[in-house]
Image (cartoon, rainbow, N blue to C red; front, side, top):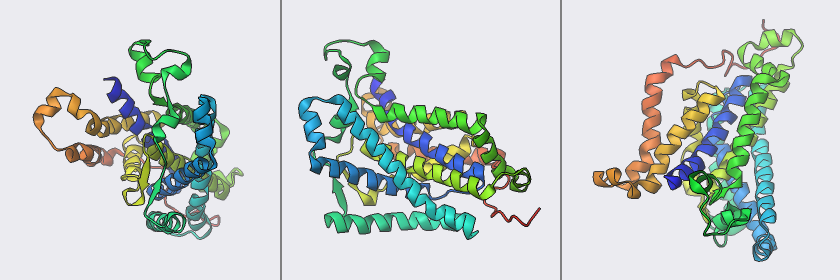
Length: 336
């Protein structure tokens, strides 16, 4: 059960953070279908940053000294770099949507096509192959164990301690905290309320002095930062190499499904992400569950579960979905 919960959190966190990325963009009035591409670009920058830090000896030195704080500090630095990369990549969508008033669906699709091509081009320049390798066991650098918190390996911390304090990642809890803070900002602050007003009725927002263009830029840039961060969190959790062909396994599109199923509301999105992540985690733990072993299904079936569930759920709930009224509509200041 402990392993199942930990695996569920590993998959739920990138879904939550990327779905929230979609919320910020769409609440401002911009459809962000480019979340998959932003995740891929963020994953590339994150893996490249970790590789460069390895080559500099930063990881080896901290590991040899047993400096847990330095290792976690490097992870936080990687998260900042990746968020910045996602923000930079999302500028393409915001410029096309706000300044050029281009079709946002086509713009997002174009970025999803651009990201893997751009990443492949850069990887071949850097590594002359299709794979970026992280030397050694990446999980051992970023993973928090109870020994890092002052406990011995033989200490039994109980169910909660063993589940949430041992063999977990700091990035998981940082992203959960970020999810809560940004949700509060979206619904309880002047900035958040103004952002949502631009997605519901931009003309009314403009009439009271809100700069709709600036708010939409802000929504997309925050969306890009969270999307890039989600790519890093998905890739670095126990991955020692990344083949760009695998991308992020469609998690960007799955996050869109989580966002729609969650009705653009953070609490619902969190619950939906846990549901989808639970089915994804089953592919890693089904061999330890007697009932699932008795079914004798191949592992690929369990890998497909979250995507099948997303189709079924959306088929029954899409009619009740209520997207922001002005999403996808280019804003024209001259119209009232």
